[in-house]
Image 1 (cartoon, rainbow, N blue to C red):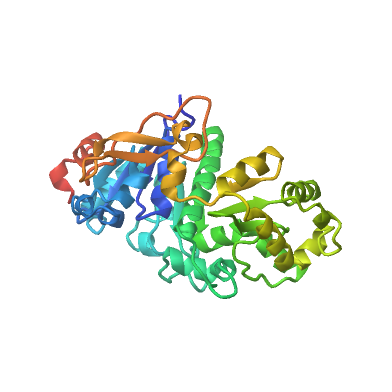
Image 2: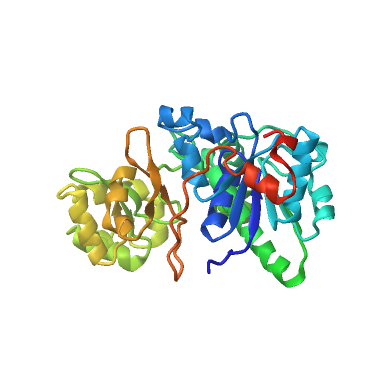
Length: 391
């Protein structure tokens, strides 16, 4: 059995943070019922790089994090829709929502009301800034949170910063935080029968993930600066040019630095006062990087990758997403899985599994649900006829 087999979760969230959380929980065996508005459903259904799929409300953004779920369409502004949700709560273990703080309370469906009805319920609210504080009512999108968190201020270099991450980092980290919190609450629920109210802030989740940068400021008095593709903790550590393409090298330890010097055929760098010890290398980073790139210019990125790793110097090419998905390290570990169905161009519809493996392989998830596909089933199961509820 999967770890969360027998757990039922209501996913009222939208777009990415909450759906990403629920997708991880579904991958671990939870039964996830996605509760969507009847008119269009989750906004992500209309997003993604395949316009024809988006027009069918199966946008590729939706596909990415909703495989293996069920869909129930309810209008929570109606009394019948609210009653249907309450009855679903009665037979569920957890609920995830990503409305602005206060919205669910105004609907009479907030944590206090629902947990009074089902004391074991785990109620997880994901928002940009948390359920209280002066910013609680602000609208929040991933890039807004990236900017406010300071993440953009340390991304890029002195000429390009501030710069956003190339993927929705704050949404994704917020979803992972929610999944961890819900999993922990489920352990206690199983042992004591007690529920929980979880308040996930995307802003705080992002700041927490920036632990080293934040600690250097709080405890070291350092004002974090953008340094591009370099590692602020060590040198030579970052991205370097070779004869044909960039590579990342992390010679963070003394022995790694010395091995690198030998491989570059520059043993004199090991005793150069500018580079001999760790702190000196950091203070003379630019000069050291020039010396390293001069040596790397004699061969290709792939050749250096093989040579350096064999000598214990961590190194990797800078690859594109298509490149890495074709590598045996990913392709041979069942990371990408076809779920049945096809894109508008006829290619197999594929999703990625969570970024970890268990002793038993993850099962192939069902196709992402059509909007409202499971509404009739669940209305009958909770004792409501489908015509009683707007769906």
